[in-house]
Amino acid sequence: MIMDRKKEQEVALELVEDALRQVMDPEIPVLSVMDLGMITGIDIASDHIGIRMIPTFSACPAVQVIRGGIKKKLEQKFSIPVQVDIDPEISWNSNRITEEGKEKLRHFKIAPPSAISEWEEGSLSAIPCPFCQSRNTYLRSPFGSTLCRSLHFCRDCGSLFEHFKELE
Ligand SMILES: [Zn+2]
Image 1 (cartoon, protein in one colour):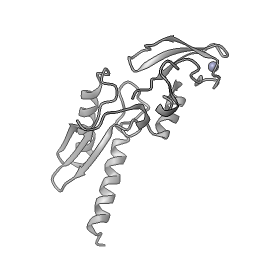
Image 2 (tube, rainbow, N blue to C red; image 1 turned 120 degrees about the vertical axis):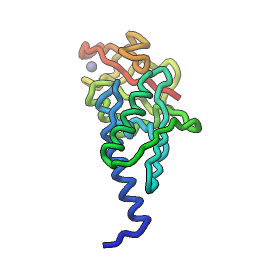
Image 3 (tube, rainbow, N blue to C red; image 1 turned 60 degrees about the horizontal axis):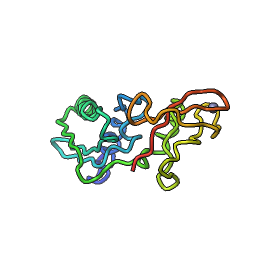
Image 4 (cartoon, rainbow, N blue to C red; image 1 turned 135 degrees about the vertical axis):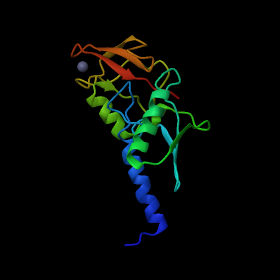
């Protein structure tokens, strides 16, 4: 069977995306680089694969780990040299997290960021509790276990939970 060039490229792109779905953020191991919206370009050539990515929070030190993880995963899977570059043209914001990614965060009991359009500075109170969905919550600390997260307390179920902060 002969696949035309375009079809071949589409199949290759899907395979690369599938592999990227298995590269997880070391700080939130349920989220892949695809869930986080960190991949800004995939270039498949006959002799190499080029990936462009952007860091999430610049304060998060995980970028080099993730970059190495992408390279290792794709090289193992496709036996072809892989180049991973940081994309200087696009900056990450929390709206880039996919709906699937937000759902995974909820399952992981971290409140996902709200859409930036609905969010106002200082609205870190009333974040929905990932345990009971109550909004009767308050900010305990602007920083949780990492700079990217804040810490909240739910008055209804008594849970302490983390929230992945909004970032523009
Ligand atoms: Zn609760």
